[in-house]
Amino acid sequence: MNIPFILDLAIGLIFVYLILSLLASEIQELVTTLLQWRAEHLKKSIEVLMGGAQESEESRKARILANQLYANPLIKDLNQEAKGALAQGFRKISSGLFKIYQKMTHTENVFGENEGGPSYIRPDFFAVTLMDTLGVDKISHALSIARVEKFKQEQLKEIVGLSKTASLSEVNTGVFKKELRVCGQNFNEMVTKYAQEEITLAMFVELMEERFGLFVENSRLAFAAEGEGETPEFLLERISAIGKRIYGEAGKKVLLKNLKPEPREIIASLPRYREVYLEIQEVFEDKNSPAYQGIESAFKELEKVIDLLPESLKESLGVLAKRAQQKNEGAQDTLNTFQQQIEIWFDRSMERSSGVYKRNARGIAIIIGFLVAAIANADTIYIVSSLSKDPVLRATVTQNAQSIVNAQPIRDPRELEGVKAELRQSLQDISLPIGWSEVTIKEQRIQNLQWRVPFVKQLAGWLLSGLAISMGSSFWFDLMGKIVNVRNAGKGSYPTDDNSSRSL
Image (cartoon, rainbow, N blue to C red):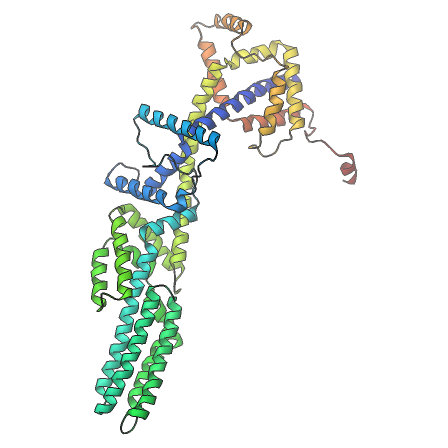
């Protein structure tokens, strides 16, 4: 055997594998779409991420929580339904086949009440949906409102405490109480605006500073206009000192940090949300205030999902919250960093899940490859024998392979659509040694007689073909292009431009 003969034999064998692998790829893609393997694997991977792989009460909670995530519009809208009568008809057929498959295999619908789900979810979509389902933003705002209310009360109490230590006349006491009452109303207004999300926390602090300074100035003017005796400057100076301490540059940073709960505190409050709610109730004196009503609404929504939170997810979120706080130490708001940590956690988990899916898909590809080889009677041993004995067949296959490579330069392996038309045209001119024709069956029987156990040779040939077909059409197309180039003594399959070659 010389080198050209071996290369022609290899090209012929690869040509057959390429044709059959294209068919197998189409079959696998069709089966994957009908049975929603990608979407089902993604849903189960999310359940494992949140509740663990073992079937238990935790995994049941994770499944229910995952169903709630999939019901969220952000993820639900990813699974776009086909439009048009023809497309919807195909969708109904595929849904029917999927239900038949579930009944035959005695498997439950992993998508809950839905018929399907998306095959891919972006990490940021998952993170936002999880935080929204758990009410992280709402709980964060509720805890912040309670702290703002407590801060307001402590500030007023401190002012009242100073007034009691001052020696004020009855008239001045009345003047001071009047101004303090107006100040309290202004403070309540700011708390309500923050609770209703009309202003941010930073704006709340700025407005509180403004109202505090206005209270001191109005008290000074009121004492001068309506009071008796000298204006109690000592009291006003002590109150002003409180304002400087709270609203100074350093004080504001500390105040903002204390008023905004960290993600770690939010996650830690989830398991003991009832205790947290009782603690918040003690802070508010007026249970009819808009601020308290907002907190009550947030905790009622939290109650619907908190019992569905698996322990493993609580632990994972706690670790991520701690990591977010460490990465964003000193910042006012670490919720964005917390969301980024959830995205990274989800993305890395899906990378591992993708590896599992690829291994499973590889096993399915081998099964489909063997079935295609058996149905097409693609016996590798017989194919090699036929190509080695028939120089005309060898030359014809090689010539067609050459034309395919030249017409379709090797590029991204996923782009093989243009190859299919060339292959169909080539098959009209070539009688390949596959199929169930009388000549093929007769020659295979003669070869089988040389083996002690009947049909072992044919089964072995189908198995070899099945393994080869499972490698995928892109693999064989790329390999065929390389071997064709080697056969042509290193000439590339791309067309050359004379002008461009001269410029080089």
